[in-house]
Length: 336
Ligand code: TRP
Ligand code: SF4
Image (cartoon, rainbow, N blue to C red):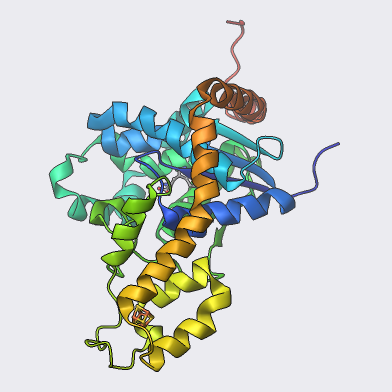
């Protein structure tokens, strides 16, 4: 029987090791969607390559460590299809078909494209593929006929483009194959910020890696910025202006009231407050580190999971592509 659950597809680019921002911002949500939706979670290695083609070997390393982190987070191959984009070649075929009908100005005016060109000036991404990045993303989503796509706010223009491409496809080929996908934004709670209170990102080096060992984690927490108005131990602090306090809400919410009190009454100094936080974080992340290591020590298991995931993804992908070839009237008079 066909599942009545709505289908979700989401993806992550394997550009490096994951950090705690991915855990709270993304993976936690994915784990919950496994109960309520028919889920496809994809390692978007082609997308990574489109920006990082000069570091292609780093991408394959990141695939392994990212998958280990997904599994450690509770992404379950029994409940969701977990696969690597490049293991399902149908993505590229639909991408090529979509690119035949996507006007270049749609891509050139995409805000993410303009921003990235500005920001990553030293990176040499003035390429055909980088311009076409959202067309591949549209193909990813359409291939599984996903209804909903959990993404960060920065990805909204890509979702909008996906809907436009899908509509144009339906119009040109007079059909209705793909749902127009809706984004699901993560707005349930604030994002965890980097140790300098900017967005957590490896490129700012303000992140705390999911696999980072105890000492490294503690040293990162020591470097965290705190309430800028609290200069001396006897100054009362303002926890609502302090990133350390926010971290408590993620790692030890039961202690929030207590922290608020010791901070506002200047009963404890920031370094003590941070060292208690580090202990909580290490305690929470220790089982994670173990699970992650468990999977990394078993590359054959990872391989089996990804092969099975790719097979089940391909079944869906081929079904969609066969319908697509029908409406495009792209049926040959011979079999190959
Ligand atoms: N572009 C997304 C990002 O950078 C990754 C991605 C690729 C994706 N394909 C996708 C996300 C399909 C959702 C659906 O985060
Ligand atoms: Fe932040 Fe804790 Fe210092 Fe208060 S005591 S300012 S919450 S680090």
